[in-house]
Amino acid sequence: MQTTRLTLLRHGQCEGGNILRGQVDVSLSEQGKLQMQNAFSELILAAEPTLSDSPLVVISSPLIRCAAPAKAFATSHQLLLFIDDGFKELNFGDWDGKTFDALYQTDAKALDSYWANPWLAAPPNGESMQAFELRIEQAWQSMIEQHQGKQIVLVTHGGVMRYLMSKALGAANCAGFYTALKLPYAAKVQIDVLHHGKEQHLSLHWA
Image (cartoon, rainbow, N blue to C red; front, side, top):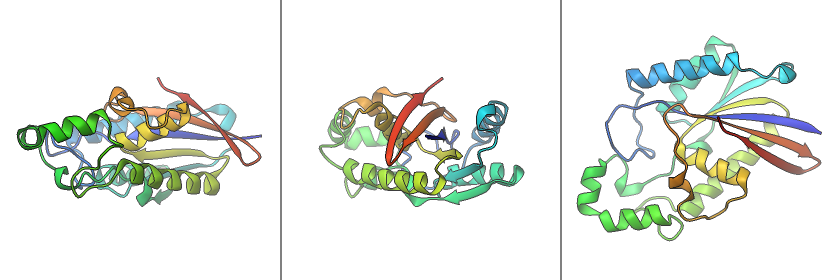
């Protein structure tokens, strides 16, 4: 049997204030940059001795709030960096990049319905939850096939992390599950994948 260890790392605080931040491309704030520096430092300090011989690779969403700190980390530690479009945040369409105050003035009912059960309707001109989860699942399988047995740092978004956490827990299409999982900026979650033939057995570690 072989183990792949995946550390999911959410990006830090961003510029732009209290907006719905899907695929709108915004940079980290100075606070966000510091959060990511601290998170990466903790990752190095907490490296698993039993997996020390396993290569460490960095994979990132292409959005700048993830890709910029991921590139800096990979460069400083001479690690391989892979950019994967499949790990972008959900595309919120017409809602993307708008403040929550503005959205609740114009689309309060639709927003509340969406948060309650995002599988029932997509954001206007946006990505459906089904398409979002399929995209992540395809990226996940490709990543695991390419990097099986390695230690992976995946720098990504809250929505992506919530899907992968639900996958590890076997909680598919559970209304309210995503909003119930609170992930602060620079949050870290670990998923171990135990490989048994073609089977994947996932365990979630969340501290």
